[in-house]
Length: 275
Image 1 (cartoon, rainbow, N blue to C red):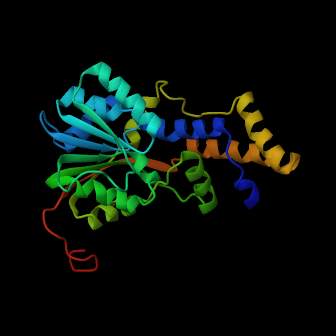
Image 2 (cartoon, rainbow, N blue to C red; image 1 turned 90 degrees about the vertical axis):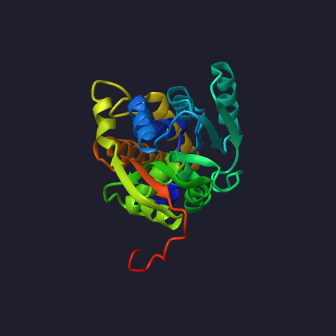
């Protein structure tokens, strides 16, 4: 079974897992971004950075609705190219930078607020990516994470399947908070956005229970068949179907908005009375 778990996932499965998880919060975009702008006190004329911006959905909304100058950073060249092309059409105060999220190409304390999208959980060092967000933020500026958090006791093997198919690694909420504290961020507040996602999807937004169609099933079985034969092909299909079912029916993950403030002075070491 362990060998089978290392079979490269079929594209259909990757897309369905992303749809079952990441697209759930994207479906609530308008309300979500409005809440982010409120929590971060984003106003016209401010400088904002969005790490893991992808093709620029969040950056465009913030620039259009708040009047802030927004910079998007992403390690994916193709996504940055598409975001730049679209930005030229909008005429908004937007700029984009191709860079690794755990090594942002900016000086210390240059942005009024920083936003870390779920893609920072795919960085080489997620803790360093969080620290980079804090580093480039001005003292007393907001640092906001939009992140997936584990919420149920999925077996470790099942979690690894999810990580592989998502392309990023969710964390426990306490881990995200710890990363922020270690980066010098205080006054941490958490808003669980999971219910808002579920409410938005109830009338028929993103499909609540994604299923493999016959082309997807052929992809899964074909890859496993070429690798290990018919027995593994059948097991692979069962495994992927169960994974999609679990992600749809069990709340294996939450989506959280985690906001804090960059403290202007060094914090006491974690183990102290105030740790």
